[in-house]
Image 1 (cartoon, helix red, strand yellow):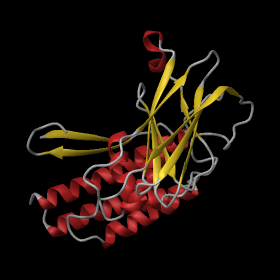
Image 2 (tube, one colour):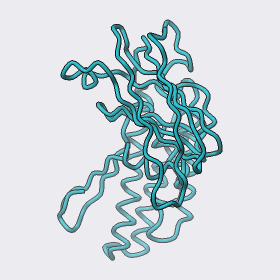
Image 3 (cartoon, one colour):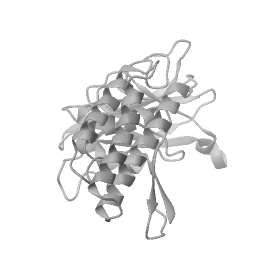
Image 4 (cartoon, helix red, strand yellow):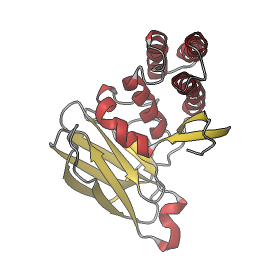
Length: 267
């Protein structure tokens, strides 16, 4: 019996962005791993890099390629401030090619997100950082503005702990669904596993110090899991799951779903 860990990060973000990110609200200033929308004691460095592209159209077999931005590095830069302007209720995500770190938000977001400049960005004497940007706008234009900043990004430890606990609960749901659909669990056994995971999610929603988005998303996920049909608890509430994944990504905290692979393979 093998363990099948799945890092829910850049790849999944690309898949669920169209179907779920429209339900996400913009991260509050304390909840995205930064102290304020425009951090104090921070200054911009050099001219901004601005690019325009065409967003993804949901349901199309082929879609627009990511917009590529090349940002020149200068001495003193600690992060890249990213702001995306896009129309509609969709969402966007931007990935640093070198580090694979991602930032994402809904199209209505006006506050910037910050991608830290890491050692990998500077490997082999690199003088630029390359970003890939995508937005779900049903084919409408979008604009990305990236500028260097002296802001030093730091993870929010509370958000990181939440992402780990959420991963455990979602792993239980995923495992229960997988086992039921492969006839390893009966309906009553699946219900027991589902109830355990829902209880864990509900506990997260009422945990002391939980942010508003942590409480609302996990409470909704727990409710949806308990109302789900057998074998479909893990996917019962895609919108709130996408919200959590996006907030964890913005804090550089990966959501990892781990299940047992009865075929013995590794996922």
